[in-house]
Image (cartoon, rainbow, N blue to C red; front, side):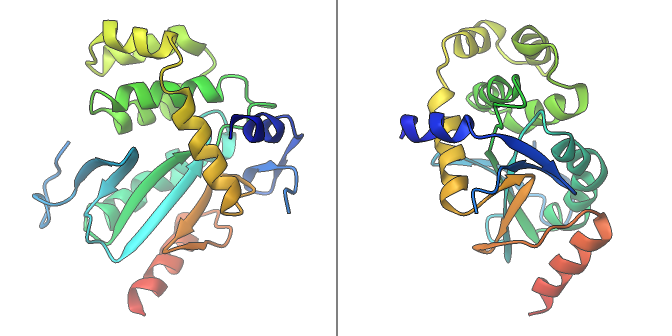
Length: 211
Protein backbone atom coordinates (compact mmCIF):
# COMPACT_ATOMS: atom_id res chain seq x y z
CA UNK A 1 0.00 0.00 0.00
CA UNK A 2 2.82 2.39 0.85
CA UNK A 3 4.49 1.80 -2.55
CA UNK A 4 1.23 2.74 -4.23
CA UNK A 5 1.15 5.94 -2.21
CA UNK A 6 4.73 6.87 -2.99
CA UNK A 7 4.11 6.46 -6.73
CA UNK A 8 0.99 8.60 -6.62
CA UNK A 9 2.49 11.46 -4.66
CA UNK A 10 5.33 11.77 -7.19
CA UNK A 11 2.82 12.54 -9.97
CA UNK A 12 2.73 16.21 -10.95
CA UNK A 13 -0.14 18.06 -9.31
CA UNK A 14 -1.75 21.09 -10.93
CA UNK A 15 -4.30 23.66 -9.76
CA UNK A 16 -7.69 23.87 -11.48
CA UNK A 17 -10.58 26.31 -11.23
CA UNK A 18 -11.43 25.43 -7.67
CA UNK A 19 -9.20 22.76 -6.25
CA UNK A 20 -5.68 21.44 -5.86
CA UNK A 21 -5.68 18.64 -8.40
CA UNK A 22 -4.07 15.29 -8.95
CA UNK A 23 -2.73 15.36 -12.52
CA UNK A 24 -5.73 13.74 -14.23
CA UNK A 25 -5.51 10.37 -12.53
CA UNK A 26 -8.60 10.08 -14.92
CA UNK A 27 -17.28 19.88 21.84
CA UNK A 28 -21.09 19.60 22.22
CA UNK A 29 -23.23 22.34 20.70
CA UNK A 30 -26.39 24.10 21.79
CA UNK A 31 -29.38 23.55 19.49
CA UNK A 32 -32.38 21.26 19.19
CA UNK A 33 -30.08 18.26 18.72
CA UNK A 34 -27.50 19.33 21.30
CA UNK A 35 -27.33 15.90 22.85
CA UNK A 36 -26.71 14.24 19.48
CA UNK A 37 -24.66 16.62 17.30
CA UNK A 38 -21.12 15.93 18.39
CA UNK A 39 -17.63 15.08 17.21
CA UNK A 40 -17.02 11.34 16.97
CA UNK A 41 -14.06 9.12 16.18
CA UNK A 42 -15.41 5.91 14.69
CA UNK A 43 -12.94 3.30 13.45
CA UNK A 44 -10.36 6.03 12.83
CA UNK A 45 -12.87 8.23 10.98
CA UNK A 46 -13.33 11.82 12.15
CA UNK A 47 -17.05 12.54 12.13
CA UNK A 48 -18.66 15.86 12.97
CA UNK A 49 -22.42 15.87 13.31
CA UNK A 50 -25.47 13.82 14.12
CA UNK A 51 -24.82 10.17 13.28
CA UNK A 52 -28.38 9.77 11.99
CA UNK A 53 -28.13 12.74 9.60
CA UNK A 54 -29.73 12.06 6.19
CA UNK A 55 -26.65 13.33 4.33
CA UNK A 56 -23.15 11.92 4.78
CA UNK A 57 -20.50 14.21 3.31
CA UNK A 58 -16.91 12.94 3.15
CA UNK A 59 -14.41 15.73 2.57
CA UNK A 60 -11.00 14.95 1.09
CA UNK A 61 -8.74 17.87 1.79
CA UNK A 62 -5.19 19.18 2.08
CA UNK A 63 -4.23 21.64 4.82
CA UNK A 64 -1.84 23.45 2.47
CA UNK A 65 -4.14 23.66 -0.55
CA UNK A 66 -5.34 27.26 -1.03
CA UNK A 67 -8.68 26.02 -2.34
CA UNK A 68 -9.21 23.84 0.72
CA UNK A 69 -8.44 26.92 2.79
CA UNK A 70 -11.01 28.93 0.83
CA UNK A 71 -13.60 26.22 1.47
CA UNK A 72 -12.83 26.23 5.17
CA UNK A 73 -12.85 29.99 5.62
CA UNK A 74 -15.66 30.94 3.23
CA UNK A 75 -18.01 27.94 3.13
CA UNK A 76 -17.40 25.38 5.90
CA UNK A 77 -18.54 27.55 8.82
CA UNK A 78 -21.75 28.41 7.01
CA UNK A 79 -22.45 24.74 6.28
CA UNK A 80 -21.68 23.89 9.89
CA UNK A 81 -24.27 26.36 11.19
CA UNK A 82 -26.98 25.61 8.64
CA UNK A 83 -26.58 21.86 8.11
CA UNK A 84 -24.18 20.07 10.46
CA UNK A 85 -25.32 21.58 13.75
CA UNK A 86 -28.96 21.19 12.72
CA UNK A 87 -28.54 17.45 12.20
CA UNK A 88 -28.95 17.55 8.42
CA UNK A 89 -25.37 16.65 7.44
CA UNK A 90 -22.62 14.66 9.09
CA UNK A 91 -19.13 15.55 7.90
CA UNK A 92 -16.34 12.99 7.68
CA UNK A 93 -12.89 14.47 7.13
CA UNK A 94 -10.17 12.56 5.28
CA UNK A 95 -6.69 13.57 4.20
CA UNK A 96 -5.42 13.91 0.65
CA UNK A 97 -2.05 15.69 1.04
CA UNK A 98 -0.54 16.67 -2.31
CA UNK A 99 3.06 16.29 -1.26
CA UNK A 100 4.72 17.22 -4.53
CA UNK A 101 3.45 20.80 -4.35
CA UNK A 102 2.60 21.14 -0.65
CA UNK A 103 5.64 20.14 1.43
CA UNK A 104 3.96 20.70 4.81
CA UNK A 105 0.63 19.08 3.99
CA UNK A 106 1.43 15.54 5.07
CA UNK A 107 2.92 16.55 8.41
CA UNK A 108 -0.02 18.88 9.01
CA UNK A 109 -2.37 15.93 8.46
CA UNK A 110 -0.31 13.91 10.94
CA UNK A 111 -0.63 16.79 13.41
CA UNK A 112 -4.42 16.69 13.11
CA UNK A 113 -4.37 12.93 13.69
CA UNK A 114 -2.15 13.34 16.75
CA UNK A 115 -4.59 15.93 18.11
CA UNK A 116 -7.41 13.50 17.36
CA UNK A 117 -5.79 10.98 19.65
CA UNK A 118 -6.54 13.45 22.44
CA UNK A 119 -10.06 14.17 21.22
CA UNK A 120 -9.30 17.47 19.49
CA UNK A 121 -9.05 16.64 15.80
CA UNK A 122 -11.38 19.38 14.61
CA UNK A 123 -9.81 21.99 16.89
CA UNK A 124 -6.44 21.31 15.27
CA UNK A 125 -8.14 21.13 11.86
CA UNK A 126 -9.42 24.68 12.38
CA UNK A 127 -6.04 25.96 13.59
CA UNK A 128 -4.21 24.51 10.59
CA UNK A 129 -6.56 26.14 8.10
CA UNK A 130 -6.89 29.45 9.93
CA UNK A 131 -3.29 29.95 11.06
CA UNK A 132 -1.51 28.17 8.23
CA UNK A 133 1.04 25.38 7.93
CA UNK A 134 4.06 27.25 6.61
CA UNK A 135 5.84 27.05 9.97
CA UNK A 136 5.89 23.26 9.85
CA UNK A 137 6.15 21.01 12.86
CA UNK A 138 7.27 23.72 15.28
CA UNK A 139 4.15 25.75 14.56
CA UNK A 140 1.98 22.64 14.93
CA UNK A 141 3.45 22.14 18.38
CA UNK A 142 2.51 25.72 19.25
CA UNK A 143 -1.03 25.12 18.05
CA UNK A 144 -1.19 22.00 20.22
CA UNK A 145 -0.38 24.04 23.30
CA UNK A 146 -2.93 26.71 22.36
CA UNK A 147 -5.80 24.23 22.07
CA UNK A 148 -4.92 22.61 25.37
CA UNK A 149 -3.35 19.32 24.32
CA UNK A 150 -0.91 17.38 26.44
CA UNK A 151 2.09 18.75 24.57
CA UNK A 152 4.48 16.00 25.63
CA UNK A 153 2.19 13.35 24.15
CA UNK A 154 1.53 15.44 21.05
CA UNK A 155 5.22 16.13 20.45
CA UNK A 156 6.09 12.45 20.85
CA UNK A 157 3.32 11.55 18.40
CA UNK A 158 4.29 13.96 15.65
CA UNK A 159 8.04 13.47 16.04
CA UNK A 160 7.68 9.70 15.74
CA UNK A 161 5.50 9.65 12.58
CA UNK A 162 3.03 7.64 14.66
CA UNK A 163 0.03 8.69 12.57
CA UNK A 164 1.72 8.67 9.16
CA UNK A 165 0.05 5.46 8.00
CA UNK A 166 -3.42 6.79 8.81
CA UNK A 167 -2.79 9.71 6.45
CA UNK A 168 -1.51 7.35 3.75
CA UNK A 169 -4.60 5.16 4.14
CA UNK A 170 -6.87 8.20 3.70
CA UNK A 171 -4.97 9.24 0.59
CA UNK A 172 -5.26 5.81 -0.96
CA UNK A 173 -8.97 5.57 -0.14
CA UNK A 174 -9.54 8.84 -1.98
CA UNK A 175 -7.68 7.69 -5.07
CA UNK A 176 -9.62 4.42 -5.01
CA UNK A 177 -12.90 6.39 -4.94
CA UNK A 178 -11.88 8.49 -7.93
CA UNK A 179 -10.96 11.69 -6.10
CA UNK A 180 -8.77 13.89 -8.32
CA UNK A 181 -8.08 16.94 -6.18
CA UNK A 182 -8.83 18.95 -3.06
CA UNK A 183 -11.24 19.81 -1.73
CA UNK A 184 -13.42 16.97 -3.03
CA UNK A 185 -16.62 15.60 -1.56
CA UNK A 186 -18.27 12.19 -1.57
CA UNK A 187 -21.93 12.78 -0.70
CA UNK A 188 -24.08 9.77 0.12
CA UNK A 189 -21.63 7.57 -1.76
CA UNK A 190 -21.35 9.69 -4.91
CA UNK A 191 -18.68 12.16 -5.99
CA UNK A 192 -20.31 15.58 -5.71
CA UNK A 193 -20.13 18.09 -8.54
CA UNK A 194 -17.60 20.89 -8.25
CA UNK A 195 -19.03 23.68 -6.10
CA UNK A 196 -17.35 27.02 -5.41
CA UNK A 197 -19.81 29.02 -3.31
CA UNK A 198 -22.06 28.70 -0.28
CA UNK A 199 -25.06 29.13 -2.59
CA UNK A 200 -24.01 26.20 -4.78
CA UNK A 201 -23.50 23.95 -1.75
CA UNK A 202 -26.84 25.04 -0.32
CA UNK A 203 -28.70 24.35 -3.56
CA UNK A 204 -27.07 20.92 -3.85
CA UNK A 205 -27.69 19.87 -0.24
CA UNK A 206 -31.25 21.22 -0.17
CA UNK A 207 -31.96 19.23 -3.32
CA UNK A 208 -30.84 16.04 -1.60
CA UNK A 209 -32.87 16.82 1.50
CA UNK A 210 -36.00 17.25 -0.62
CA UNK A 211 -35.67 13.81 -2.23
